[in-house]
Length: 505
Image (cartoon, rainbow, N blue to C red; front, side, top):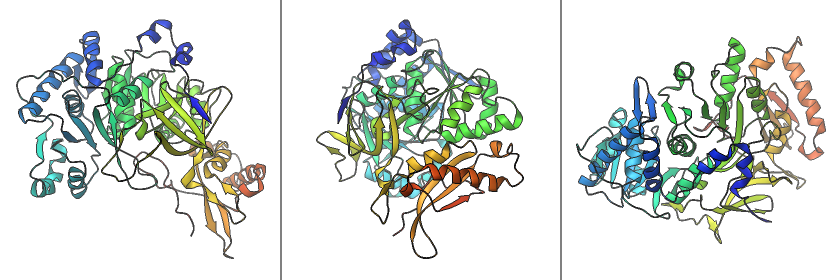
């Protein structure tokens, strides 16, 4: 089944006509920036503790760093950025992509040897680093002297104009999550980045001139594109939370209206809000854009109780993050929403295939061709309802094939158990019983704030009984044979996805 994504007009009803008409598509970042700097020059663009940088200041600092790159003869080069979240990261990233170069964003947690390996694999001509990571560059200095090293706070004392680029020109290489295998470098063109940026504007009322809090790393596509690029596009003010342990203090001081977050962060915030009987996310917060992992419908309902609308979405590094977003989350709280414009979809044997302006050019340094006749196979199992809303039902690689030949999607079974308010997270997996028989097992992480309110004397017994009731509503082959209530969280990836247990052999 092939589906062309709806016209952008499907999102028109979720905002005002005036705001909707301001959402304009651009082919490249330089083209976008020329418009935005004229429109927002005196507006605050970036804030961190004690500092405010206007769009004009950012523009001048970008021009200065372009001169740094130009003086080094860097044009059409791949330039790494190895830095924690900071204003200097933003300045250098924007300088690279507006000067005809390609940014390669390296996660700051990488060790010395891996940084060297990335320099070689991606063919870096230069590496821009944050002073806080300078000590992790010794191997690069010793083994890759051809890679020019720049601190991200150096200045040229002059300026350099932006370079005109085309829509298909390379813009940035981002690491994939690597949850089902090794991490790869996905090359996103200017067109793909701009489509992902504009997609972040659809589906909610207050789009322009907002206040964003940044807690996600720029090395994650959700943080770079939905948090940074959409913020710059909309003339919004982005506050950089340097340490997530200070998040609630920063919220109280900055009073953001929008938070881009992973579900685990929202879960923690709600738990603390219940514990202290106070909205820890602040009374000014209107929207949470939530993704990078499955969003439990419980979060949508609980956020609404604090006057916050949570918008679940679906995206991939390979799709410049945003594929769909849910503007009807209170009504369809288990959906990842309506597909964004300029995409085509195929659903082949339940798997979602995509092509469109937002899709990557390919993996860098890999032999595999991720496309089949122009279609990217996501590995995600989906369904779409009659109103065009998308639902994720699992991943192909996670399917458990039972001894009787039945295929079980863990995500589908987990969704049933996750409906219970005391279930924070769950994992269904294949296990082996004492008699050697392969069975389905369930482990849950209980939601502490809800468990505290359970009146039963034996709370674990109560929870197991409720889980058993849900279990009996499932198809016979989907029922689990063993249940366990965990006392600690599951192991998680850097993007807070649950690391699934390896399949039984």
